[in-house]
Length: 424
Image 1 (cartoon, rainbow, N blue to C red):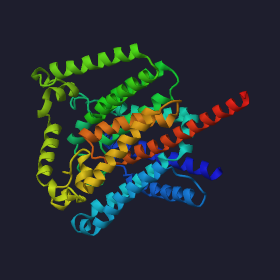
Image 2: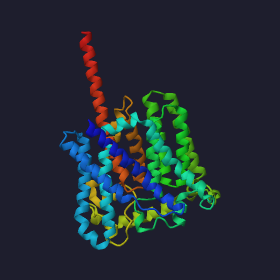
Image 3: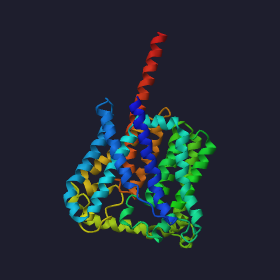
Image 4: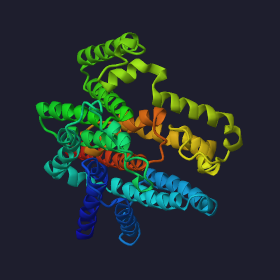
């Protein structure tokens, strides 16, 4: 037991570094200070936790669920594909290989942390500490914008400041961006909302996250966050048989979506708005990021047949246009072929279906995983490649949630059978 508690404490340390320090770094640079990149430190620690977790599951008779082994098997397959391509990639860009080795270590580390059932019990028990981490992380962008004092010049968006100061182009800035910060804010908010005991606190945290996401400036993160929270609320309301509340909330949501679609999207009156959300919606398909993604998809579709079956890992780097793999789940098709693509999507949908379908008693990991699967699921449809750190964190937490849910159902059934025998 002491070994497990020690490993859980070590995992908390890594999560704090991953969710806090990595993203704080570029905001410190916005304030004019130069600080070392903690990326490699996190990668090394994640590698250590992977070794410790494997030791736990082998030497100390730890048990991993079948779903956990399936996810781990898929991760190993993706890693083997990367390793096979290392000799060719080294000749093209050695820095890319080094960064991807670090990314692989973090991916495995986050997966092993997420699948550890003791972690979720510790989070539930020490919920005040988790809420403190959430507040520290989410309030920092607001603080930075206030200190800088030039929010209006950047349209109150740290994203624009990152580009204005050219912080995103350096070779040493891998893994550090407003996009990953926005995604992590959403992930931490889901945890905070589930750990809060009072509705007023939940509303305050939700509003704080909206303000922080707006300032960070990640459009996809904001859209995914709203989508996940709205859909989760609808699921919860339906499960509790609150049909009236469900109908009213769904109607209001649809009305707002229709209003935005017909009165904001494409409306030239909002093109010069200081609100970047209205500005982006008014641009519609002409919005810069939408156009760039559409151009990338068009380029990749023209040559997709050559890599459709088995894929071609890092094909974009190999042909001299790095960073132009599809910014959605099609990246799996391009990198790992049709089999990897179908398996990944099937696994994602299966986990979401099982957790929603058989969701019963309140279990932190189950509710968190549903929200995370919804959030990152919509992102990999429109804006994320799906091979990032949070993909495997989400899959690991979902696999742990399914096991915890099934264990709870078994205990409930056993308790029911025992009660029945006692009555007889």
